[in-house]
Length: 202
Image (cartoon, rainbow, N blue to C red; front, side, top):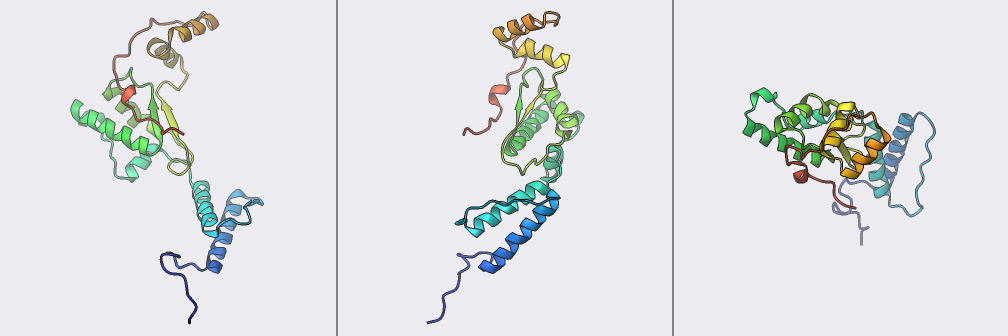
């Protein structure tokens, strides 16, 4: 009886153990070159070589990834963002939610948007926020949060206190910063945040 070999199902890439070991060593060498110093690769003795290879490939992909602008990621996937002037209000709202959904698919989630109209939010995303570079965007595990009022400018703080802060937060802020021009508390003019995609729970 002849020796039974691996089937395509068992080894879809047709890699025998030696081939896989060679590729693992190449991956380690590439990671060491990127790090520019000796790298310690810790692995359990019983680690499946296929799992180790897949892990090292993921690490290499992340370490090789330059900073990425979310806008470029969208464009590379064929998602266009026309200038706002080319879209009427209905078309712009549809496009805005397409962008919001596409960003959520990439684990980028918006926060505190209810003070902006659809047109204002779309314009801010297109012309400003999505030009910010994110290291490992689309590769690194985890979620990113894009807070419209995250710039901590005086204008951001005023809008935050006006539309989003609780009474307790406003009181604490006023006590800590008595010279701050505390605005009156108002209900945001738009109702979008409760509909925004959210990260999946643990």
